[in-house]
Amino acid sequence: MSDLRDLYQEVILDHSKNPRNFGHIDPANREAKGHNPLCGDQLRIWVLMEDGRIRDVSFEGRGCAISMASASMMTDMLKGRTEAEAEEIFNRFHAVVTGEQDIGDDATEDADGGLGKLRALAGVRDYPMRVKCATLAWHALKAALENKGESTVVTE
Image 1: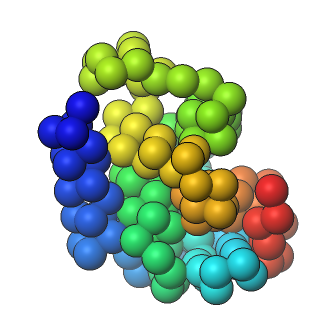
Image 2 (image 1 turned 30 degrees about the vertical axis):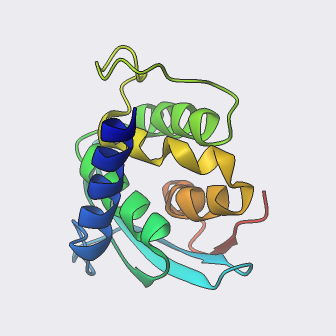
């Protein structure tokens, strides 16, 4: 179990130090801001929706390793997905990080509910304040997909 925990920490550190899809995409036809007032994490999400799919998605912001890694992994995972698929992934991810759903030690896609690298963030369930960090980008994405364009404050 220690080796698996070490691997997850490496994944989180890699995505936080070298975030994927970082920067403003142009064109984008949806965007939203996310802010976690409890720790000060802030980010902005840009989405290019075409034909019902997320053709491109990116983010900019500042925050802890958990929030930056989650945003990076989220953007990687959601390119090419439909809005419904993105919502389904968010729901599974949210259930795992809040402890509503457990994922086993088996690292197959079926065992982790298709979460892939996002599984590395499952450990935040033991630290309720960190759940907000892990879900910040997801709440901002949801606001962007709903085309609200307004600031999203995470208050779970």
